[in-house]
Image (cartoon, rainbow, N blue to C red; front, side, top):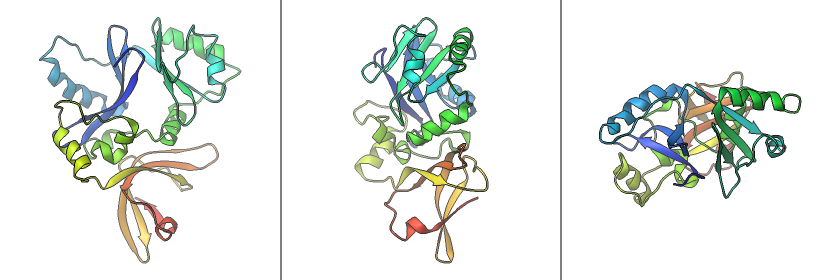
Amino acid sequence: MDEHQHLLVAHCDPKGKMWSNLRLFRRQEGFAFIERRSLRDAQLTELKKYAVFSKVTIAADDEHVLLGVAGFQARAALKNLFSELPDAQKQVVSEGATSILWFEHPAERFLLVTDTATAERVTEALRGEAQFNNSQQWLALNIEAGLPVIDAANSGQFIPQATNLQALGGISFKKGCYTGQEMVARAKFRGANKRALWTLAGHASRVPDAGEDLELKMGENWRRTGTVLAAVQLDDGRLLVQAVMNNGKPTACSACVTMLIH
């Protein structure tokens, strides 16, 4: 990968199950990856097993922050703050301590990886013309974009194809040996995967937690049909739920059944 790319990748165990998924890109003199904080320490432990074979240092970064900018005026808001912004052809640009990543879906947005001073400067410059939200807003955008969210509750539970990584360019079937390759390849060439990533929208009395089961009521019976990866409640009261569910097109009947989260 070159300095203007960022890639969605997975780190698997020997059975092909994902410990986590990562957003990988070049940063300064090395590589950086972004993942969920709940998995950071466990991920570092696994990755450092490979560091002993190379002159490489793998460490957590607590000095830099992430700042997401989204909305139809996002590019206009940032264009006077940086000399260059990323786009579809150049998805990562760097300026000083800042790496800016470009995302296409669900609409153009930018993720800044930067130091505290720059984050404060950008925040102050946008004050008055931007609405500030916590990370739940960015999580909602990732769910809408179909980007799988793997937290500690679901670590080691799913092969990459169960979260649609093959459709997002997150799996190479031409790459050489990697941990879990045999199982990942078998799922593709033998059709072993029977699950897929789904986004559900609606209303509920509470926001489900990662790892909770989804059940469908079909007639008088309940049937387990999936697992919650992430969920967020929007300002309008709607609930977005990202879940791994049985891989099949819903029929006219099953589209109308009651769903239970427990």
